[in-house]
Image 1 (tube, rainbow, N blue to C red):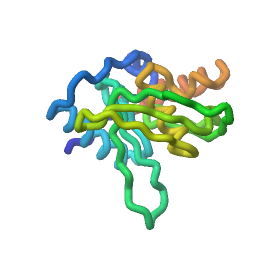
Image 2: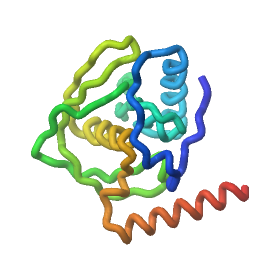
Image 3: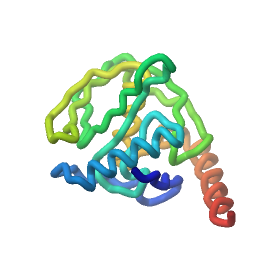
Image 4: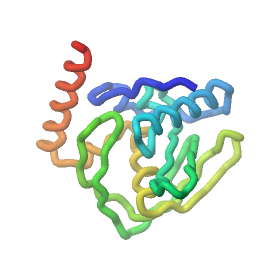
Length: 173
């Protein structure tokens, strides 16, 4: 497994719609392993393929936070929300591609998502709470949308400027 570099906003790859996964290959399995390792190391609870420069409709997530519970790493290929609740939740979201920036985002409180697993088999699950927020956030990435796109323009511009400054500082380091 290899730790991947996480792309920092602004970057045109984070604004592109990803291509569907058509087959599960050894390279795709390796990417899934790399993404999970990268997500855990960051640390984060979700990571989408475009965040590591791969333009495939693939995401990984694990929202288990309790120390006494085993991790639940999930890999979703071509995920799609098939149902969402009218009830909404507001979570303070962050993003590995927008480090140390957080904002309240309102999303459906519950969603049902269908996807293909790494065995090429169709899956479906109902998510609520943090899991629902996370899966929607990561699916947004696959559609070229960031959590800051839900914010008012001034707040979004302020965060984007901070990220441009961070990228300049990292480039000099």
